Amino acid sequence: MKLNKNEIWFVAGTQNLYGSSALVEIENNSDSIASSLNANKTITSNIVSKGILKSNNEIRNLFLQANSNDNCIGLICWMHTFSPSRMWIDGLKILSKPLLHLHTQFNRNIPWDSIDMNYMNLHQSAHGDREFGYLTSRMNIPRKVVVGYFKDLKVIEKIAIWNRASIGTNEMKSMKIARFGDNMRDVSVTEGDKIEAQIKFGVSTNGYGVSELEKTIKEVSQKKIDILLQEYYDLYQISKDLMHNGSRHDALRYAASIELSIRNFLLDGNFKAFTDTFEDLNGLKQLPGIAVQRLMNDGFGFGAEGDWKVAALVRAVKAMTFDMTGGTSFMEDYTYHFNSKENLVLGSHMLEVCPSISNGNLSCEIHPLSIGGKDDPVRLVFNSKTGPALNLSMVDLGDRFRLIVNEVESVVISQDLPKLPVARVLWKPLPDLDTAAHSWIISAGSHHTCFTFDLKIDHIIDFSEMNDIELIIIDQKTKVHDIKKELKWNRSIYKF
Image (cartoon, rainbow, N blue to C red):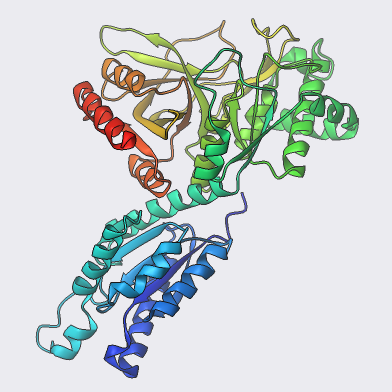
């Protein structure tokens, strides 16, 4: 994750009406706000002051620079004074970066004893931002509006949330996904329009034969395998049969060679996410297990059975949460626990759950896999941590993409699972399983998801608005009849 160069450009709107000395003060105030925001560690990207904008040409030129600057992932605009919004039209028409409209002012309080018309003219954000707001609404410009004093924690938190969403959006624009094999046969939800995804998000997805990996696996040196195995021994509890003198040690070496092969392929091709499928393993001896888990833990997106949409979503969320410690993983709703007290979902997959969401007890094991027809795969087995989380799904409905998010509560797995040798998480969907599953199903939510402990609903709202995609929220307040009405309204909107 090389995200330390990300920049948010901060600009203040004004005009030449107020005189040169006033413009100097306005620019100093703008620089001061940008510096204050940049000093706050809650905001992860660098806030860079770009001074004041006071004419059509200045605005358009700066927005052109922002569009062409790879480090710039968004702009914050604030109107220090009145800034006639018609001069913003040309710039806003071409802007391709996320926009945040900060409705604030330089001074927290009104200076009651000294306020005069000079002060009023200079500090009229309450006036200028409404002019800017009218135009952006008239032009239907996607943006986030944050209201309040720029040093207030609530204001900073809202900017920080938008910042993370802009990181995810920027990540999608340059994302390359490698598909090893196709999607699982006859499955519908893993399909999708890759061309439309590239037009909409920038995500580029291409397929590669599994033979590409076979060839590189044979080229992996034994020395590199030995080095990687030592890392396994240092990090995980290795089952005895996989140790140096164990009966299944060759399987562990082969699993390590798969990891090295996929990692080299992804890095060499600048891929940020990948998929595979157990139906298309060709010459591979094992379905990649520990390899996928560790690559996800390092930030790569992943989708099973060729599901490139969830692979893109996992990578975008990994980027949004690059400095957070809760964890994010590819996930699948697997089976239910219908209990008189509390209905729960057991989430897992055959092998591919990211150890970033583990409770810390990681066991490296080898067991049979009942499907795929290959050798027993090596995998990391663990229970997840507990606490609030989100479960996310992105689906292609043919005429649009839809993002579905469910707030959940991960709970302790109090029972031993001696015959279930996979990573797993147990959660209570909000508001309850009946409402959540009903709402998820009628919203066309996939069984493949991105599960994260690090984000809140507000992050997803900002992300969906930046990317202009439909969003369905399932949370504590959800009622099925409200979801049904929302889906009907949305169908009408997208139909016309």
